[in-house]
Length: 212
Image (cartoon, rainbow, N blue to C red; front, side, top):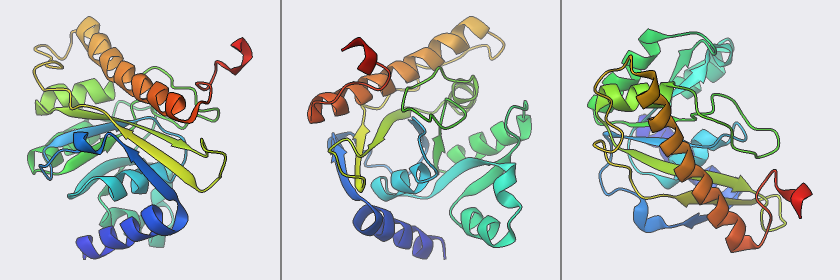
């Protein structure tokens, strides 16, 4: 059942809804799970777009409000989603994420915690660093941009080099300075990928237009 829905998602988002371009496809891990994908967040299409690029079984947090509709809740649950209360310190959700990674799933997270209306990448919340540290898992940074080639259907996904678990290890999860440093490292990688996309299409980085 899972693979059936996963294939439908891939066909719809990769071939029908969007004209998708993947930059640095060589960075897509050969392994089917046991790592984290950390991406910027623009639209509700981001999770299935990522699912169309990476191969494996997924796990991702979704805000609890999305589970109020029973049909939609059933669908996204089949695709690997589980609810989290946005803004709350949800220890159970973090443990669920760590457990799923240990079960060799690909855990998808949007470190900013919310969607960006203007494409500007914000600072990361602490969740991504905590989950990576607890799971001792590597992270693949990703940046998604839509319409950068002047067409609404265009979707470009840039995949970064995997950040090893050693680089983002957190010996003490109460060490706020280390958590902040790991979070910043992850977002720096995502920002570098956004810059690569913009250079590829000769467009300004979101938020810098007024400086030109």
